[in-house]
Length: 127
Image 1 (cartoon, rainbow, N blue to C red):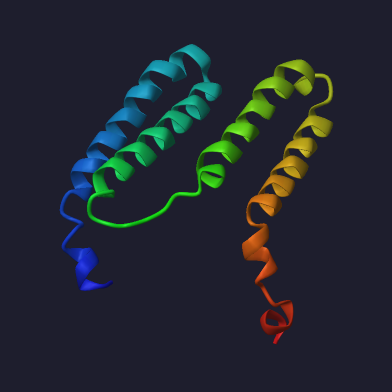
Image 2 (cartoon, one colour):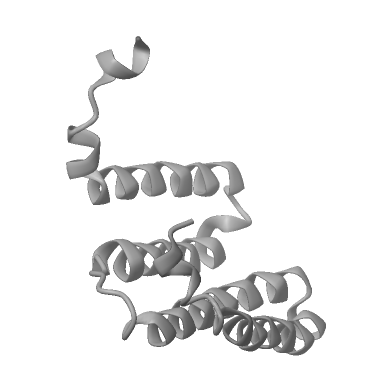
């Protein structure tokens, strides 16, 4: 690990205390209300808190750019698809709906990472 990065890791335990506390708090609230879906909701909340806390905590120390489509829009599109399709057709056609999630997710990732995928040379990977 580079020495420059090591000196910035001191606040990480404090960040993760906040992150873990939010995840546990969300689980305590949502699991009794929604059961296993409470775990899913708590996980989403935890990821949102984690991304926000880490971004706010390290943005002054490191220069980085965020691809808003990959980090915000694509996950929200997937979540929106699930929120619409699951109550509408999830119980009647679960295999079709869940297969559709996989196809949509793969297509969404392929489109989001089209530039990176275009630079991969399969002949170099196979060797």
